[in-house]
Image 1: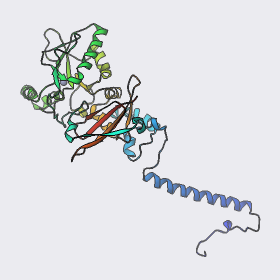
Image 2 (image 1 turned 30 degrees about the vertical axis):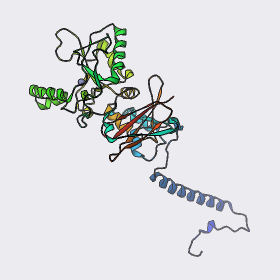
Image 3 (image 1 turned 90 degrees about the vertical axis):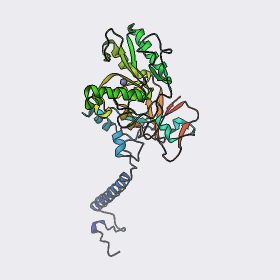
Image 4 (image 1 turned 90 degrees about the horizontal axis):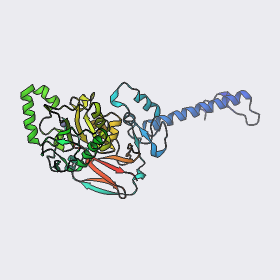
Length: 368
Ligand SMILES: [Zn+2]
């Protein structure tokens, strides 16, 4: 042991009492060695992604997408201080977008459902915009002329929508009528076929030129109206020319409460760079509760919402509370491009599966 130099003060003669100075030196040395060891272990764990900065109760874990980017491997922590900073950030696009993580045990026992790759093109959460075209064309739509309530009118008997959303439209506009006694609301347009869009698009280009036209009218195949989950509101007034609905005055009630019925304002002001369209307060899109309420309450777009949901796989589902206190688990399963995708779903709980139109499936589970 000659090659290890031990300072004289640390050499202990066990036959004599240890002087006070030496005791202090030994304690100090042990403390330094402990700190060094702790630092080494800490950094090793930090770089391997195993360190949680704040531990929260398992069911109420929470983290923002930004934090998730920083620590992809860890799904069990969140930093409340960072979240508060984010909320006060001048970047409006990132405010309040943190989602809670649900304990996977809330789903109970699960089974597997298989979906083909083409199934990603269907469902109420499909994203259709200037990047992603619509693959369906009226397969599940029907005229609402015979099914609509008396609380509103339609431009003609051909106004159609996906069969699954007619009840929600009736219920929302019935409630509006009950409050305000106004029945001048008109659904100007619902489902629009690919062929109809071709005519509309070419006509608009002829009127205002391509650049202006593209701010308002989608190229054929890229219109959300082709999904059947969309409608435009107008006011049934004499001399009606173009859309008169602005969602203001008493009509603001519809725009403020539509999310309770599963709808969102798809093209809000200030989000033009994300949606690709100028503000359209008359254009409503069905995505269903709780998605509509989360999107509306947090002032985000469908594009931003899907980005957040994509971070929550089946082993770290998001926990969303709707405005009535109901709890939902939502998670994303990436589609297998080479064959069927196997999606874990709960055996005992009610759930729905929607494609996102570009990469996979979103499972929405209603917790008991
Ligand atoms: Zn529209």
